Image (cartoon, rainbow, N blue to C red; front, side):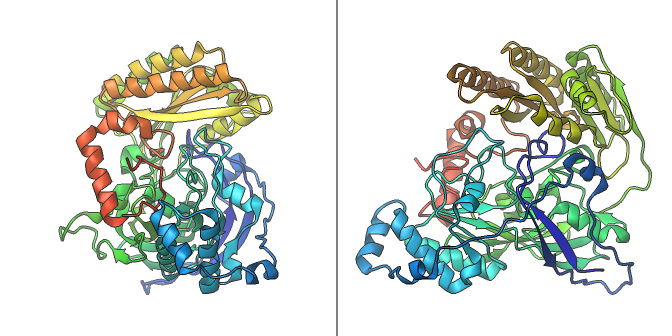
Length: 529
């Protein structure tokens, strides 16, 4: 196989159907990745090309962005930390900005000048998301781009010594503030860790670095008849997919990311490196550490490599659509299809607003669509059609300049799906703002998006209250406040209500045991106190 050459695009948004939509290409850089095959079979070579299904949606919006650094004299003039400065940093919860920059200088000495960026634009891209309402005013002091597990370990050791928060960064596609820096610190961008380490074709698994994009991986191994069936945002990297336990349209048949992890290599906050398991597809040896780190959102450690199971690409596909007079009718029909045991591979829903947006932007699949609540279903296929992705992309063009989208998701037992979707749609529609609902109804997960003017306090408060009621409603129905986005900053206020105080305290105790200084992506999932 050819060496992996990837087009690295800084994109924002999340998740393929509802979540991946609100993303902009901020930069594209080609970087080589090396594919080392563990199998000796002679498969035909396949190079990378843009995914056709995604290219219709994404277009090619690319502008190369170079890292810039402070002048050499500024670096040379920076003195090493004195014992007094170090002691002051340790007595405080986190280092001050001056001490953080001393730590950055130490990292630069270990990794080299080209791995450290203090460029303000670069820092802004890594500390703020236009597609998330969960941002903070603080920004990291620097962006570090390691190339290996060993380099991440070196960074962690220095950050622990100086009490500097570490914020892992992948594709930047979070909508819940997962990569915000509420206490400043250092952003660790894993996008340059983009190699396929080993491909075990006969074992149907693959070991990759955290910065490998799943679409690139699938394109590289397509000729072998295998693929990774998770399908979140087309921009998503494996590290972030594991850290948030992602899913997507294929979750109805294939489950979520946790079901495809064989083992993980993780750098702990103090720089220790651990491997969770060996390489068999199943193991009962010791604690299930895969489950501990999958979905931990970078709060326990930094995932640098993952060995993943692969599936056989289905050879036959059957796809259909059905329209309904109301949202309730559509979601009720979805629940009935599942309960009746119809063997669906995916079951997706879009309301009439989404269908209108598709048509306003020229339709999809070579046709215009009936503008009614619609179910899309498939029996066997590797990727879902472009309709959902194009619909979400088109939302951006719908709102006036300066508008923001409050995007969120919940999941409930399938029997309650029709009820919560109808209630949520009616409530958001009553705001008098652009709003829409859609989602992966095959597994009880749906998404709501409301467009509002962030400069209008009344609009902001109205949308915030609407979203809050949606969260509480999902919990009342024995659901969850996050089917796939994670908790991040945006939803940590609901976690105690969902899990209970004792569970929350146990989670905090786990974090303290591996991160006593609370420097690993602090402020996410839950607060220290």
